[in-house]
Image 1 (spheres, rainbow, N blue to C red):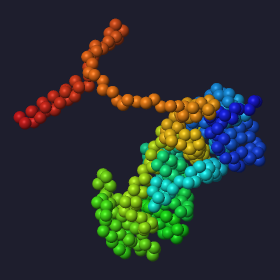
Image 2: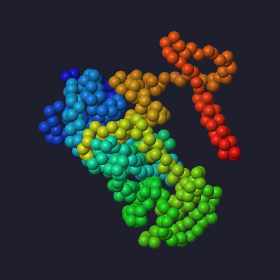
Image 3: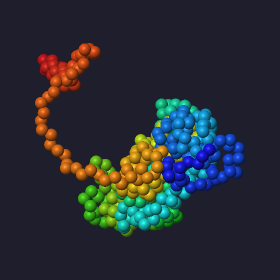
Image 4: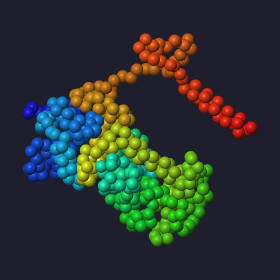
Length: 416
């Protein structure tokens, strides 16, 4: 089989995928067709192409000659794909994601985060993925629902750049605090977390390891006030230096009301930060919520390619690897574009030369004179095509008025 053109967009994207044990011949000695590394490539392309079931992937492989050259096979059945996905080494997929994170920081090494005094922040949170009933025998969280959780750590390098660095999946009944220590590290960045992670034992361990954190705690979280400061921000109710009773290290406690009037209690060991810096940093936790929304909308996670637990974990890791590859490509080709704009354009040019993709991003934009005022036009008569259909035109306002009249009559009868 002839080699594929390396300048094709999908080849350029896959070239950023670092090789590890999945590509080693020793680990693939019994593979008759695809190596484990090529299986990963197939599912990455399935995510990029929107092939949301195994039969579509099978058809896509047969239809794309360049893809066949890349994975060195002309066909692969959907049942084989499911078995091979479940047979991948999940630890090696986690290693791939970690290596992509290292590549990302080579591209963004000079980044200082969103605020110079706060520095880089990493956000930890979990998202629930509802699964179909065929997974209810081991992922049930109630009689009507079953699903899994993805506990993810993302790095916020700047306002336009969010990158998934680590992930550990779990069944839906595992709490956030039980998963957090699998994805948190003792580095110089500030970890931002929500209420599910404010567990005293965990916080004590972070203090012992020197981990910087900003976590939302519950209102009944027990602490001792060491010193009180007068709030400078009108939304802040309390600004205190506190201790956790079980540890001697001082912590900063901020109690404020958010834009909706809800009480928010924050705890951090970064006692030197100002009120505004702490509030703004916690507000940036919203980046991971936007990331989860983007992930679920554009890298579909609700359709399973495998029913085995390992196959599901592998599918989730490959989804994050896909997002990581797209973000690295964006930084290399069009760093000024948003993640959604870049992905949608990348998908259209996936099997075209990379030059066409770059040309699209570099095309001159048309100048606009702004929104023009359109003069009022006479209402046109509508052709209902009554020669070929039975039409009784009626608009929504008819039913609105009818409902109002019914309520008016009821009110009159009640008054009588």
